[in-house]
Image (cartoon, rainbow, N blue to C red; front, side):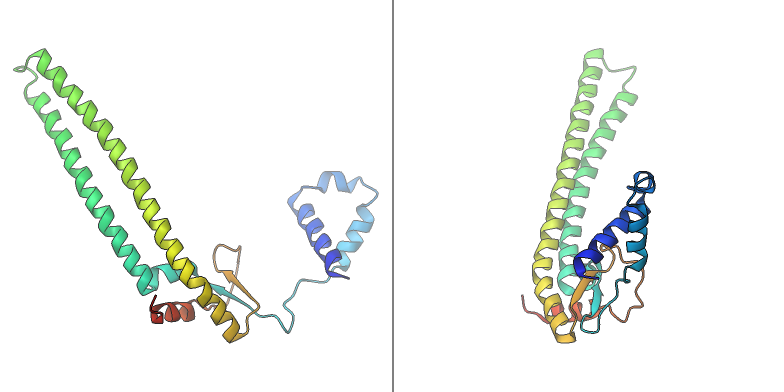
Length: 197
């Protein structure tokens, strides 16, 4: 069976299993020949010349020196923004307390003014929180991209050194099981830490 036929067979099998063709195919005259084609399909296996490995890119980010430095920088930014937001929350609480304490002694104009200040500061708080979250996401993505730019050549280098034909992301590729012997994450982290970039 050639590679094109096997690909079509696997695609057809996937569609059948997912129910995409199940209702229509059963009544089709192609049902018998399709079933025969699927049953005769060779299982997809790793050939002798091809080796497959996995890399945990999340672990590379969290355990490499560069990843840890990026996370520390991000945490510093988040802590700074959290302190600014906490200060604004405290101001709002102070205004609310002034309203509570002065409910009977403050004039209606002053109470309206305090409530307006609370509303304005609440709007500012939400805006600043959204801005801080957006900026944190941007910084995280920038750091991930910068590290990814450095990691990809390292992954290719490790693959060539160890004779791997394919490297998959460990958790984002749909991998269901690995015994760990094909995991190159530690090698990638070591080379990334050793690189001067």
